[in-house]
Amino acid sequence: MKLIQGTFSQQDAQNLLTSLTKAKIAFHENKIRTVHLSEEDIKHSEQKIIQLGNNLRKMIDDIKSHPGCRIAIDTDIAMTIVNN
Image (cartoon, rainbow, N blue to C red):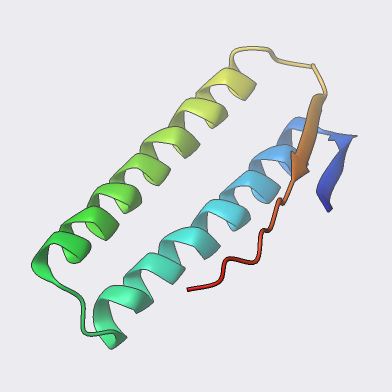
């Protein structure tokens, strides 16, 4: 399934990538707060939050390093039903 496919202004691309990243970070933060996770799972979620923040900063730095350019974003979501 296509989630995003298009070419965006730099500001729109930054806003879109920031919103998506914030949603994923909020998912992990909520999971830490509301689900009884093992210490290992909490550490994994915390590392994922850090990684997401780092990735966002890198993407924004990349965008800013090309002033005046438009940004093409193409993302898919692949989902597989897994029986337990």
